[in-house]
Image (tube, rainbow, N blue to C red; front, side, top):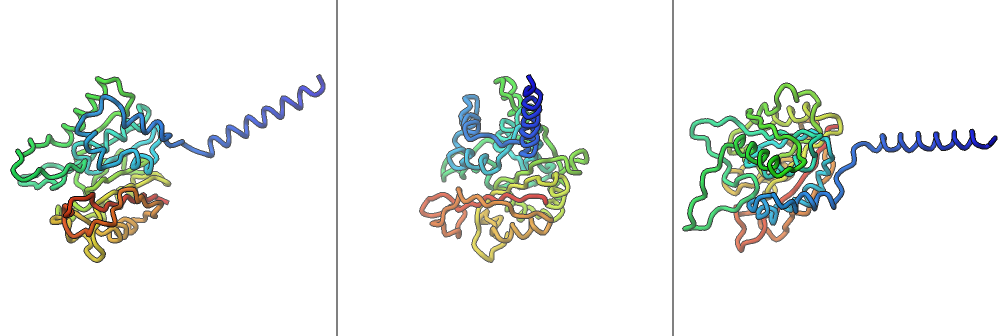
Length: 283
């Protein structure tokens, strides 16, 4: 019996050490198997599954590395393809916001809708008008609720890109902000991107992530071809974001296509566009 107390003390000390180690690790990102299950969910729409072929969501989510319970904001949410994937990923203990700018008379929408759908072929019937982003996000949230999906609530945010974060989230309340394939559009929309990036920096917690994907432009073109070729120079985008205080954490090359000459909106002969994915961190 005299050895019982030292043995009990050792077990308690080991348990405490393991608990501290688990806390030090912080939130754990979704496992690849969980990401695959989210993408394979039978209630996802056929339109989203078609977009999956080009968007490679299993690779993008793996690169972002979301975790249950995180607070995420999807800038330029559009129809909500990425917003819904984030809501499924962070689960009901998390929160997801989808931002769009207020509608204005004669506003020209991005030529390539969020989700990456290709332009219709010549002679093909025109696609029906897309619903406003808040309406599309509400429909997605309702559809997931009806299907019993364990997803985060989706809150639509309608604010200018220059000031995209509502006051209740503006001071270090977010873990993640995404901007998928629409940063270039901010150029031909005339958006001042510097205050937008500063607002994102301020809204993220220290260690928070800002993930941007876009269509790659040629060196030296900056954002000048945003309204024609719908491309942006990667180095130009990176410099703008880093000017707000962000540090580049990782580069995703899984959507790269070195064969794309990057001199047309749609490569000819047809091929995937060269695209980059950048993960920035707030120090």
